Image (cartoon, rainbow, N blue to C red; front, top):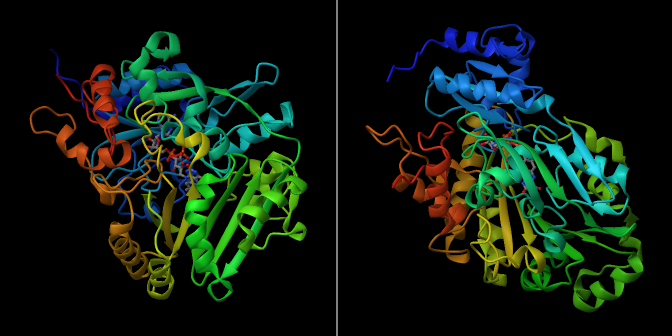
Length: 500
Ligand code: FDA
């Protein structure tokens, strides 16, 4: 076979034959920098040391995506895909290994089409979830979709890795409610539910971004919510009993009725208990005062509103309007490092005392966000979808630390999060220690490319892959071998092909 042409200019001519020139940005051209940085969330990867793409392609049509994939394969330029750019490790727009690559940035593919009668929607991957929530609420104030809390998250990456927020106990993951997809595969062909086969569809609904092609759009099952929901926010200091509350919360919150979700943000000397109840204050009060009287919820804590307003309220504050969830720059942009864990046995009060006393007072200390599971998210079997963290999970922990400035300012927070993660080992899931793929963490391991084969090694991938996917990693890798055997769609934590 003829050796592929490595010239990047040939790649560019190939792109230019099928995509308007104004949608192509080469490194060094005037708008390249602003397009690249537009959705970079983690400022660590704005650095000049970052390995950035040679080209950015901003398709407006599925045909442009097909052209990008075909040209990339023909001219040996790898493609990374970016939707909302929220990847914690920046894998949608930067590479750890210096290699030529281009990004397909879906920023201009953001349509949301809602069919209120059928209770379904099609959403393009470049939409942010705030645009989806807004579109649904325009079609019907009593329909919703269960996805993340932060309205700026991109649909493409988020749904690829699961996606959960305040409706997780009622309706499960975003990816659990995906009915169909349109994907451009590694051959540049468009696949959907009918054409792609069972394994491929299973893999794209939670198997992580990048590995299985470029998901162009998603068909969603919309779900009913009442016209009025209630939000409570209960900040408690350690000297107001935060530790006792947290200790009790761990085994209680996963057993609440599915209409109630109370998550916790723990930091410094405080724990904030934040709840969403799918109903009125009148209905919530007897429930929470009988099951969790110590929290001290009364009528004055109730904030009644529509579901879509609760999105703005929870993420952007009391004064935010529903339109604010369309804002594409509302989330904090900082330097950050993130990790995650799953808990199946409650931590003792003594352990929480130590966390507050020793860990939240250290230099660089950050936040723990804890989302209770149970109810709908815990119902599917471990292998029903790639996301295995189901039955028996009490809650998910997200560790976050952020800072401002490169170099020295990073040292204390990064040390803190790694040391704290090591401290937590005895208290969380083991063999494997489970982690959530959307809270991407390259400390868990990275791919190694097999000498000779030029594909990512299954053995190296297993190290991080079983933490995210447990036993499902093998099926993901077998599916990868079927749909992308040459490992064209590859990054530091993409699924390696398990070739026969
Ligand atoms: P981005 O574009 O960076 O993509 C992430 C990964 O998916 C990359 O590997 C990328 O190549 C791939 N990808 C992107 N588009 C694709 C496509 N169309 N087809 C195939 N692969 C694609 N999570 C959560 O579950 N609940 C939450 O509440 C939050 N909250 C939150 C807040 C903030 C401020 C941040 C920064 C992140 C979160 N997350 C989260 C994590 C979030 O779910 C995760 O980062 C998603 O992967 C982001 O998707 P984007 O499209 O924005 O990322």
